[in-house]
Image (cartoon, rainbow, N blue to C red; front, side, top):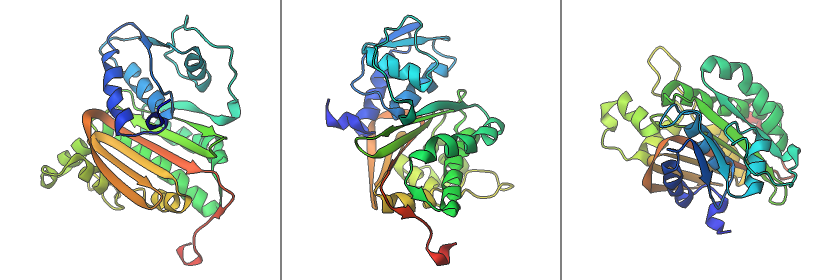
Length: 280
């Protein structure tokens, strides 16, 4: 396998445009060199969409991929899809969830993060764990408040024991961060898509109405990942933002990505993560 497909990148995002063109058939037979959380949530969102064809089902050419989709809770696998006899360790899979409203998310997001995601994280003190849960809530609530996706937001994850890291992906096929930011204030009209993404990441910046409290950004998660040498990736429109450890990069995508895709990689090392005393 080409190593470029082992993580979310400009190459994998651009390949989504080819996959999306296949979504015009009632049953779709897909061949893809990768099947990772970020690609699964992409499939889930677009298959939930009411257009172009309702009630679509897919089958992957690789039986092991069909098996994995079934195991992770993917709802749109064809009933007659060929399933391999391979067995996947259920302890490493973070089952799919889809939220259509803030009310639904409020009732289930804490349970999903604390019960399914955080067990794969390195050790964190309770105050930091609480704030990490709130950072995941920030991702979900922003998508549901601003994304305007008819399919809500989809999320899933996977722990890779040989690589000692967990990846969690969130995707809403809505209007995307750049469009949301530009609608909020005409001053941002000339900004690039990646500049809009960076603005949305800053604490206090929000496109919510003035009656709501400003967004908290993802600064806690960014600082945690900088120390953990983890990865935060956000793609929206033609913008691609990546933080790897303390290093940040920005790119313009060749193909436009509908909505917003967030991918997080956390290394499960042996350290205990906590706030410094003056931060608590």
